[in-house]
Length: 305
Image 1 (spheres, rainbow, N blue to C red):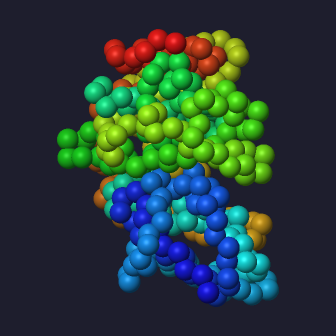
Image 2: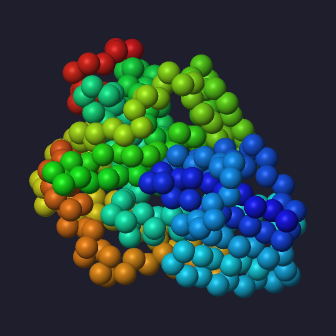
């Protein structure tokens, strides 16, 4: 019998149970922390968790799902399924949006005095590498490396209230930030790692001052600021993380449906739209040197490399 409970950003509790004796090592927790903002393991199991995943050891595969619970029947063979982090995130994402919070696939850097900048882009655009280079070259702090949970207050100000403090990179890139790394584990062809504590801000909640849509390349450097209307159209899919809406399970043969009901969007998106219209949004394309300099120029107080 296996039971583990976790707290996620936004004070979500998630309980995983299995009738199999699943091995759960520190490496498993580090991997989950790379997928889920502010994940911590709870010592006591909640009586009524917000979300629940029930696993039953069985040959073949079957899936039952509701708004707050998923039951999976499949062969785990005493190890957590590699689909589990994706499923946990998919369930949490849907819960967050239902409660007016938005998990955006982004890195987040800055300082507590001036605010923080969301670094947004498609997968492989260089968000995590850019964030780490901003820390290394310009003395900024890193709030999150891959996913940032955003709250929009009544004044349409964006606040980061949780982020993934465990980062990942391809193995060849790991050496670039070796002096910053506190703990690392290899996961396939990638590394998951935490930075030393001085590279993270002390604050649990930080103000977002700007959004940078970025793409690293070795071609022409360019930077342009979006109008408020263009920002809404370009950022909306990122803030709802529509690319992570559905989760493929059982090698693509089954689907966890993360679809958000229209009435939920109608209730929560207008405040998000006001926040996006209010915030400065910049599209930056170019080399690492150019992109990090453009981001650093958003801050008056920074340390030169």
